[in-house]
Length: 505
Image (cartoon, rainbow, N blue to C red; front, side):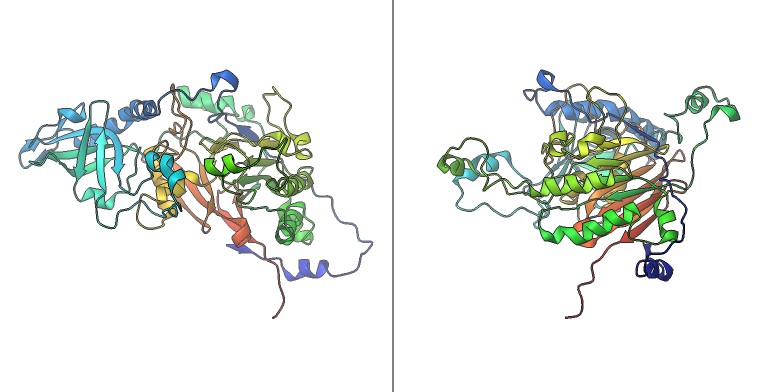
């Protein structure tokens, strides 16, 4: 739903000052407990010499037991045409004509996917081809493979047409191998939603004890917490530093500060306990120059003032510094922000915010600051709810693998696959992890939001063990002028829309 300022509040903005006294409103406190799931090591501990293939084996080793447990429960002692389905440990152990099931990693063999050899040879192109919106082949050349440490098996069958699959997700398939060596799929299973923590579980030790031994906590052991709060989520501010940013951004800023509304609306705004900015705060920059352009360019000391524009970061810093005395902010980087390109993106460096960094935590502090520049993806507890969000890159990459544009369905699949970025490192750049794949979702969030989406959308999905997750597509603010408000009591959402009246032509 969209919120409109009522007539009384609008009239209050147009009348002359009065001597009437108004109550002093206080901002709802924010209970904030972030996780460091996607923080990379620093200095010499961060290496890029290892192979990316290890990530797939780490993911398979982590998720294979979960999907095998579901498959075994569903298909154990199942008979089809008098033949009992049996489990096969490895892909290459599948035998022709034998009814069986096996688990592995999906690989989509798509001719239109990016090729590293094309990237190497692009310096010799007269003109680079435009980026593809979809990897799907119009001639039907795409193939779905299932692989593990032993080998690869081609999958065919009707369930593949009705199930959303991309490279990197872990599944179990049941069927039989035909004479052509293809595995005809009769049914398939995904890991589904993992365990979901209770609200306040990380903040309240008594609730954690309840999970372990089943006893109920004492009523006086749980601290009192405020109710009726809201969390504001916005993405795609797209600040470029020009005058086109000013009006809409100022409306957003004044609304969050309670300056653009009357007393009744100010009371509602004071319930907003935190602002989360989900990527692309700065508009897209100039593409990197090719090697040939770099060779032709003359060398200069320092930076080239003609190529560097400090206005976007300065405007963003001013925007944040104006809000921070009133409301805490979590800043997630995006594709166009000044952070590393590969996932997980690390926090935007505080040097970019000479004014706002005064509100950040001190170096070495374990407690988050009022201004928290975090990773992309990001995970943490806000007002007791486990929240997981990103700047949009994983969903935008999954979009290229599948037909249609159902973003909520893609988000649901990510959670049921238990992987926040399944296409990394195949077509989504990421760090080559060796010991653990942080994109594996080990605990189910209560709220999963994705920034920089074409439009606002939301739904609630449920899991087999009673899990309930609020999915939120956060639209680009620069294009639509919309901000999402999440109620921390009910997890219901509403939209606040900002627009500038340009007059009649």
